[in-house]
Length: 318
Image (cartoon, rainbow, N blue to C red; front, side, top):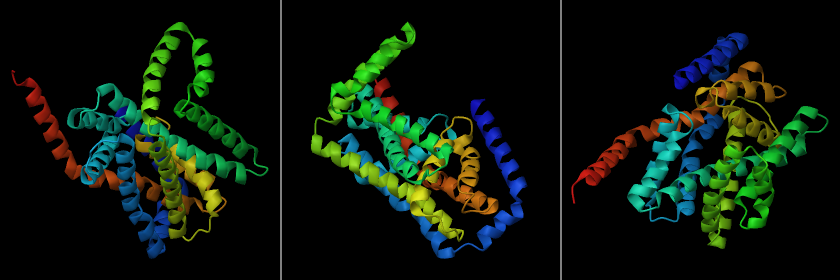
């Protein structure tokens, strides 16, 4: 039911957007687009997906062949397109536990850590870009402070020393008892995960830097989208607007951010893009999620086949 509601909200927002900007104008933007920039922007999904698979192997420290890691990333993209709340990423923890011998708790914590690392890298770029471009725009300053505050919170959680988590422990201790108890239990598991991650300091730093570079490339893909529709958006402004657009797409109201992300792009880029061009960039931004999901579909059969094999082995009497 929740998925159906999300789909309905996404479709409703898209109908409003496309009716308000005139669908014919959006189609005209695509007809008149720069074919070279358009191809480059769409093909950028390939190296970005490959880099994500490399980063996952770096983070997990497991003997996962590159091909298997890539299939896992693509399969997770497919599941994320049809399941709520990024459940496709949780599937990666199942593979780590069942196929590569990870303790179940650590496998789940690792996937959560990966998502938090992604978010921290995104927020770092956004914080820098928003503070740089805010100028006299009080709303951008508000966004900059919010993004910076969230980045600081994630940095504390992922820091390699316990002292950094003291402010979080202080806040948790003052929450209502039930909430405090649950969060305290989570933090205990989280400390184990962060200690494991930072136990190889040079590898941890390399993984962090790789993630930051990866998300810089993700944001630059939005810049390529704007070039495809003949817009001249300064790169630093694009970093700020793309960050906010991605965050808008994470609001758990729409399907895979479709609709909310499109509306944010039209609003944020309005100084550089017409509403029709903004809607076109919104479609291209959605392709960032749809293309990997389509590419991962052929590997879903292999994934479920392995899962059934695992279940059969578990049911075999010993």
